[in-house]
Length: 530
Image 1 (cartoon, helix red, strand yellow):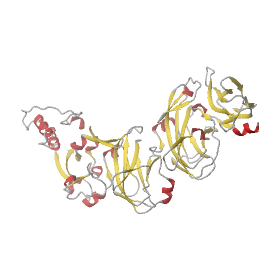
Image 2 (tube, helix red, strand yellow):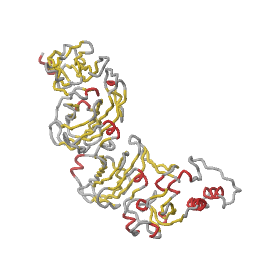
Image 3 (tube, rainbow, N blue to C red):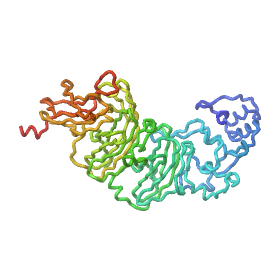
Image 4 (spheres, helix red, strand yellow):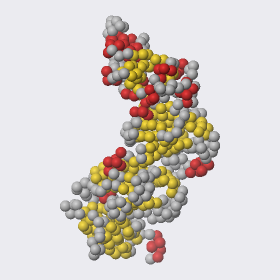
């Protein structure tokens, strides 16, 4: 139906010209009258329905339009008076709003713009979804089995077309347009039938200013968990935005709630604001590659992507993924004040002991927020040596032949007790997935010292250590041939780099692929001893 409805201004913002001599009783004349504001688009639509043999009624009432905010009183307010239509199609009545269906509000970079475009939601809208934005003067035109009062309509949460277009639904309990905090925060659960990008914003009602770092969005399974923490008394607005492309900065307002906070949350204030990193959880690529973080080994329950770590021990997060994948990661540390970040990729290490025993080991030196992102791609047939260079939502994988790895998971670790001075792990490439490192576990190796190198790489036919890109030293496999490679060796007297390479069983060309990088350093303590 929408594709057959002509919009007076066309698909672009350039006005169309209509024959000025055409009578108003004709379609061209009516289009001209709509363009001049003499006839409403609803009257045009009713006339078109009459030509097509459909029964159409023009309805009047209240609507929660662009200027509406949760908690407002629409009664006797001309600002919220509106018109729409109901059309009888295939034995039942459905709603059509051609005025709203021909435009869309989009937000990008904090600015809201109005664009012409078709919004299918407003064509043949279901009554139980239509009622969230439209309230007719005659109750019978709600088309609901149990019509509601105007006072009830005003208390309904503000759910707009992008909410339903995205296949979203409110989970459990009854949500009003106003949410009351408990201990300075509120939580909201939204069910998803398909993946969409979601972001949230908390606004101070007094001056409509955006409050940064006060919301957290987590996707656990098919349920979206929204957490807003004003932490201080006041009245706020919680806005939920969606976009079909989760990497896009352009999104639409899907839902809005008024939030009333009557208490302080001093713990939340002390912990500082959340880092503004977008939603947390699995991306569509996670299902594509079979990647998932679980609550424990062998469990089927997905892990909460927001993890509070209260121990000074290394955090171990169980991970499952399909065979034949390259895995890479990035990790950033955000201070509690949220003002500065630090790249700390080398404080995370993927360890794989068998198909179902993979873990990410994460060492948090200081308390703060750690934003952890995981990337994946299939192992290319031809793999060359190299390292990993990163972009915002993907990783260019030089270790695997230059292919781009896709973001599969986004997690936030809230570390309440940092480990203190802890050495970083060696830098691993994406081809290290499937390996288990035993020694050495620290990235920095003292020049002139001997170390025992030991790792499990059951998919390799040979493993070697390379000193500064020149000296190759082969590691030896145990007599049982169990894929454990080891050797005690001296890292030499030259500062530089030590790398570990592996030759895969599946690589017919016999090439060696880089797995790990170490740094050979001269520590000040060793200099003083000498």
